[in-house]
Image (cartoon, rainbow over all chains, first blue to last red; front, side, top):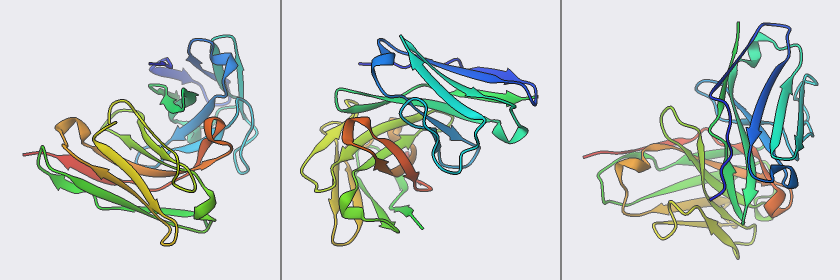
Length: 106
Length: 121
């Protein structure tokens, strides 16, 4: 089976840049999607197809994907960005999620 | 607005079955691929199954293949998952999700609020 690996936690100070990685074999050859999940809420897509932002998602969210690693970058992180973040990709007509990264803003 | 509402969750004994439903509104349901995703307490999302817009293609996670069956009724704008031989490992919040984009390049642009399934004796 295909695995996506994320760091369990990332900490960032308000206003600084947060980077969350997602690693997988030849991940750069696939599309990667990122979801934000706040406590008690359903996930929300913040990046699709590696680097595209859905309407309504702030410009401070950006994504990249190359080699074996995709990166979600949050520039000028705000306290409201504190949440769990999950990457997602496809493998052999099935969907795979990363284990998630808890972003702490303090 | 686009909305997905799951129902059918509850407490069920190990070995029993349960069917979950998802009512869709605010978009062309018959043109959308749909998925079921679950999330165990304190864990990340786990994808379960996909059904194509016309119902003619289905794909399952290895962990539930043979036990879970996804289906849809486009005339009623309903998505279903039949879950058999439930174990405690199936305890989770179950979400239905709408796909956007072409099948193996798609993402989940809308999620329901989820319905909790608790498998316990």
